[in-house]
Length: 316
Image (tube, rainbow, N blue to C red; front, side, top):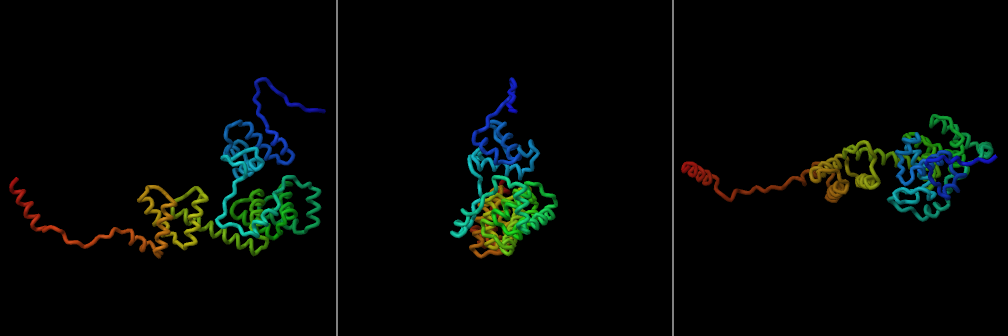
């Protein structure tokens, strides 16, 4: 029995690139839905917000699904034909760089349930992680969720206790999506985090940075959005210089007075200048900001000037 496409007179149609068709056996149902939606829009731009609204997918998942096709060259994002990664402020060591090439890629083919069950029986840690993960995330795993967890342990080589720590961290910041958890787990593995101790150190650093970012946003009157990459770099440099939030707020006020807008580069110049001068408090910075006036005697005689003004008035 053969099936054929029904072509209706006057009906719309859109093309599917050969490269996309070649990936159909590897993609998930969600990835296929997003691809068909993007292709149906022709040359109109497809955004995360549009996909989320039209297909009823949460924005975080929509971005992941779109990025899947970006990585395969089917879609592009702002002219980039591959997923964009945030540059690291500190270049990786040669050990990490050489290790990075050996890291496994996220699974492109699904594990069979038979294989999943076999791996669970062979490794008690897998069953423990699945049980703990469902408890932490407060949901019963789908087949796809189970496959992801099994793959991360059995194929990516992430220690069960480290994966549980990653899941707990992601849940703590409101990121319960398994795709986000998978991405985070692989990034930590890429950074050489393979023990509980190393994972806890990373969490401490991330929490500290997030807390500092929130403090900076409050001092600069930023609400309703996260700092962009460049702003985060400025904020992190202020933290490393041990600049107080109060001094940051004072620099912000000076910035608004001078430019009538928020400017991170301008604020940064003020703060670095004060830091180099050893200023630690608002009072010290404010003292420098005050115009210096000298006690000068007037170059004219006030009594004589008043007398002249009276004579002029009498003439009138």
